[in-house]
Length: 227
Image (cartoon, rainbow, N blue to C red; front, top):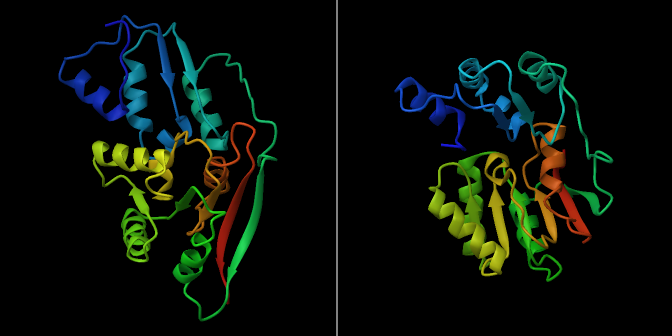
């Protein structure tokens, strides 16, 4: 084949079973390199690259450039050139605010109240865990708020159906984990809501970048529990 596209784990499996040889390939592209690192694929990538010829074109695409990614570049690339299209850490097209949850009030109730406002026309809600995301989407549906979930425990088909329902407006709320929402390009998302706080600043940047796209304005709200 002229092109092979796959996850590190699947490529490694095919190579170990002698079903795929990469010695003839002269270019390798690592998309979402920072997320590959987060998900523990670094050893698989080392094995795959070791089976390719040393003189090759290696391209990394990453939305963030932390110390771990810099080390990865040093390990895998020779005399690398870095091209950055980032103008600033947070996009100017996104208004950011904090929603403080009063003591004694359930943040789910606050979320449900916000989503009743017609201004919240297409909302991406981020949760921390797959279980929590699924539970939240079902709870919103019981409140007669049209919601779907997208996370790693869902099949690819189920994720595609949820995404299509959100894109076409059949549901107005999509509840997602960070990994599942990575790389999504959904037009006209009016709001991003950080229902659970992101683990890192980089995750925060990824999340709020789902709104305020294509010259449109967007809003990002982060829930903070009162003490």
